[in-house]
Length: 117
Image (cartoon, rainbow, N blue to C red; front, side, top):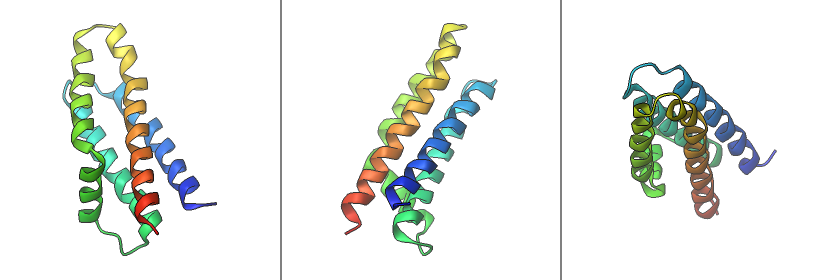
């Protein structure tokens, strides 16, 4: 299996986990904190796939910054706002969260594909 395929497997797993967290989260605000943690962990795991076992957390945080984790935080804030729309908003949160995580994961993979030469 290629690095890209291995990384995509991780991204898909984190997307599903993120959707599950959103479904299980009861208190407003807890969702964003959990999702940011998942996203940084995903950056770290993908970095290890491309750079090896010497890859460190600081590098993952830097890579997340380069790819745009700050933009994702804005989307997560919008995701939290869906708590204000009973039922329909709550139902929309899981697929939106999964899409945000998947998009970030693909951006991280592209970053490492371009820099891993």
